[in-house]
Length: 234
Image 1 (tube, rainbow, N blue to C red):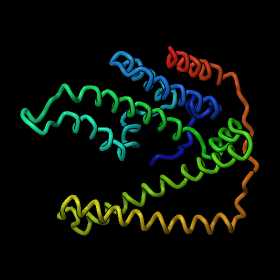
Image 2 (image 1 turned 180 degrees about the vertical axis):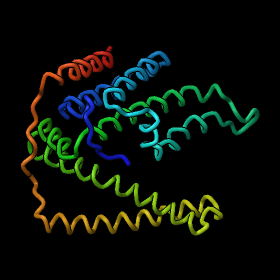
Image 3 (image 1 turned 135 degrees about the vertical axis):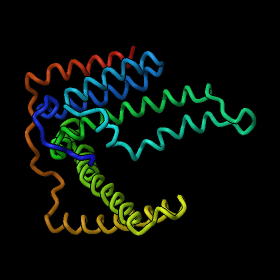
């Protein structure tokens, strides 16, 4: 599930601000260099991030499996032609490169989420964005990181329940409708319970967050992020 997992990797010991800098720098570089050569370099850099996070590539891709249909749809639709020869592979090259670029960014994001506690992410956001804007963004990040895995789990359980009741015999449109309705209902219910829980616990607008301090181990990460920013601007 796309959430934080305790570990002893180098990425787990990094300051969340350094990891955010790497993630932002990688995204900028990936969208600035869209050629096959640039994406090949991006693949190597993403692999370095996964090694530092001790995250196997297949696990990272599996974590973003819900986004894969949208990533694959672009090249498939671009290759389709309404007239003979019906399929034009050359038209799918540019969308395929763009989709692969998005996949690389998602994989690096998974490495960040899996190695960074939610409280640390909120603290990093509020340190980088001072004032009410930082507090608002920090609350949003914390709620998304905590709520999204639960919603994805609800969708998985809804699909499992549907298959157990021979729902796989229904049409694709009917199955999508059933899962979507179940997911929305459960998300609404969880949102209501979350609001009650926050009020019951006197949810703090500006709580005491963990102290963040850069250490020697963050030096290479910050240098890596700087190199990504420079490459993105070159």
